[in-house]
Length: 246
Image 1: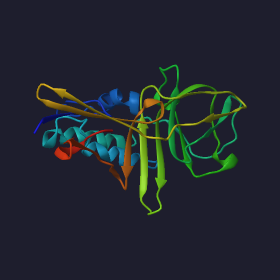
Image 2 (image 1 turned 180 degrees about the vertical axis):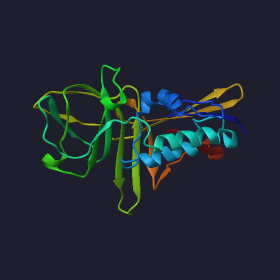
Image 3 (image 1 turned 60 degrees about the vertical axis):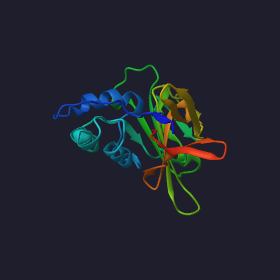
Image 4 (image 1 turned 90 degrees about the vertical axis):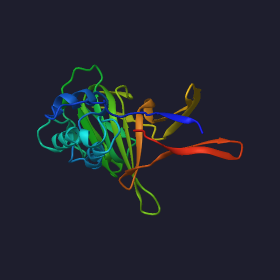
């Protein structure tokens, strides 16, 4: 039976921290891809909760619990600065335009495309199924880039699904004062399995991506949908297992 080495697509920076967790410093390095979560936005509390078990925070096991706990407490508190949340249609101001997004239920985090902006300069557009003019969101003119997006769906069996996408280089839009611009995200999920021989057996990996090749995680009923693999030879199954992603 081959020995497997799994290549994980991680969604957070690996962090080795002392017992006193400097959460702002650690998450500051992660925010470049993820942005700052907000417990007032649907889905973000669950995102913060994944820090309790994600493979991205090291060391694993009991040794890493102070790090995980410190990050979760800080992210769930009122301490950090957060992006401006725009969750309803408002009359645009003189320097603003309107955005119509393909996400009907969920949120999109937009940051100034030129970089260098503070967290409070970022904008979080939140959608709850509004239609027509009620689905428009006002924001300042300029070029903006998607930092992350959350999509919420419910299937015919009543199960709740979420799609979390994030990355440092997302889709860009140009907002012009007095005009309406469309933000159409590709909500499809692309799964790219990888397997190649190595000196110690077989190296197996997985890439899961969404719009603009941003990394994504698929959540069903609050838990990440597992990515399983099977290695076979003809009709024989040599080994199988699951891989971490997102």
